[in-house]
Image (cartoon, rainbow over all chains, first blue to last red; front, top):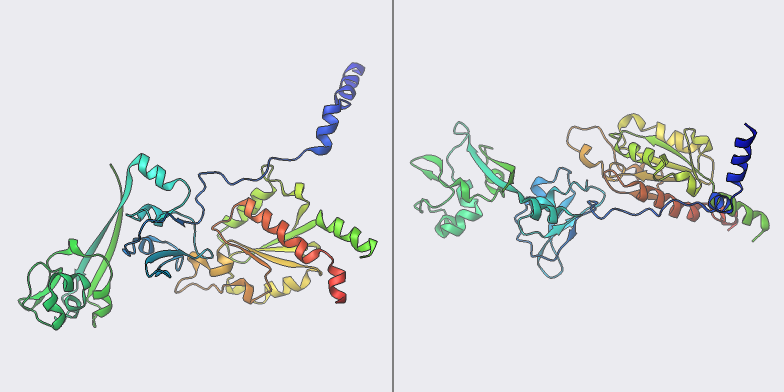
Amino acid sequence: MSSSVIWYIKEFLRAEWIKNFFTVKTAPLVTPEHFRDYPTLTGNECTHCLRCMMICPSPGAIEVLKNSEDKWEPVIYKGHCLRCGLCVEVCPDKVITSGDILERQEREKTMFLADYHLTVDHAKCMRCGNCSVACPINKEIDPSLAFGASLGSDEVIMRVKDGKLTILHPEKCTGCKTCEKTCPNDSIKVARVVEGFQD
Amino acid sequence: MSIIQNLKNNVRSRSIHVSFVNVGSCNGCDIEILACLAPRYDIEQYGIYVHNNPREADVLLITGAFVEQWDDKLLNLWNKIPDPKVAVTIGNCPVSGCVFNRRGSYVNPPVSKHIPVAAEIPGCPPRPTEIISTILSVAPLIFKDYEEMDKK
């Protein structure tokens, strides 16, 4: 018994032990490399597709604004951002980055596919054609639509055809919801559908 | 500067007493505070101690989006803390309400309109390192030479 007590005393009298006891300090606090911090810009050009704003789960965390050089640029509001990284994953042009999301996406070949479903409530629709006139994609395809002409081509997204609003090419929709805002009767709805995909 | 003031500054820099209050958070930020106490971050090595009693606290950590039940209670609690005192909010909720600030929800952010707030730590939730470094950087601004500041 006495020998073990002596062993303890000897152990605690070692110069190294005493030095460590008084000068001990834990390792400095560092943020790991892979930590998803607030998204930062990579310098790639933003095309204003607004997918980042669409997928963001937190209201008001991301906004795509024009910067001083008159170019679109996503702006992150730190008091709102959850750091979930969904905006980084969904961006097709890799405009923003956070942690190792982009490298991992490259490695694992994952992506988000955005799809837009247009539905018309024919009971409410009064066939005024405001939606097809206001739609910016329609105007691009058939400029005569902008002047209220309804004789245009069948290449447009939606058109009043035979006295009924017909959706012709839903795959051309970019999900801007202009038609939804323009409709006086709330009869057209744009559902934004995002699904994960791996090669 | 008097010797007493020097002594007070020295002691206060290594003895920051923290109390925390949850005004309607999802518990995520509270868990990050708990992580600060755990051995990996170990806030006591920096001279920060945690209390549950606001009368013993210098720093009040606030988490949550401020639900309406706290309307009268938070100011009451803030008044119970002896001077010098400082309030630090943790996470997005006290700043903006974050995901809870939607139509039909009964939250009333920001917390800074209910009591004076010295620092806000954004993040959902913020890292323990961010919480610790904020407390350490805000405390000397408020507590150093507190009696001298009072005279001016």
